[in-house]
Length: 234
Image (cartoon, rainbow, N blue to C red; front, side, top):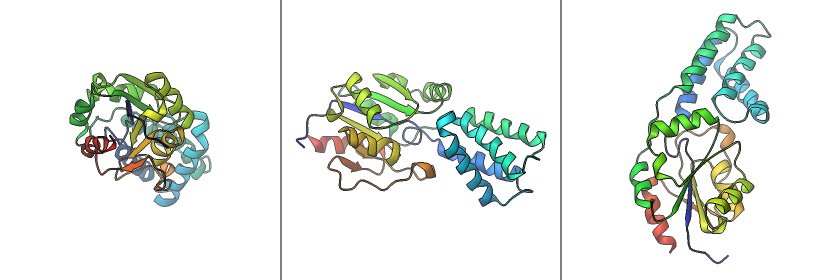
């Protein structure tokens, strides 16, 4: 494939621009402690993961679906005997998760500001609409993007649609994110560059192999390396 000039850059949000998974892990630990009298922590976590997978098609990605999956797991593990007080506590920790602070990751703001005006910038994130809007507002990064896309899922069709609407098509676009499954592999399948920025915590559901043989796959240690990578493409 002949490389075409880059005009559009898409950025994932959670664990690419700001911390997110660490708050889910904390909530999961609180959840396992609530059910410690009924099962071991590993079994509780496995049950929760299975419930999340089952429920994605019903509730989508985000905190509300995660909270419902915790309740469902509690019912399953206790064989229907979960106390009402425990359900109330699960709802409380779910609400706490919806209010967690926004902590931007290193090199984020300076990188976005350096690229702003040179490329069309689009935030592409999935999850609960209200929660993603809250985090974007609190991050103070919203004005650095030309477009905001909050989607129910990310696949090759998602990137073709967004990069064709916002920019000059997927072949002249790049997607930057921490999830190989959601950000990188489908963006490359759509014809874009996929720049993988690993995060120390990534949800198990998002784990796939790195597409190292793909010509448009790139990997950097942090967003501070993105400008140099882009310069090297031209």
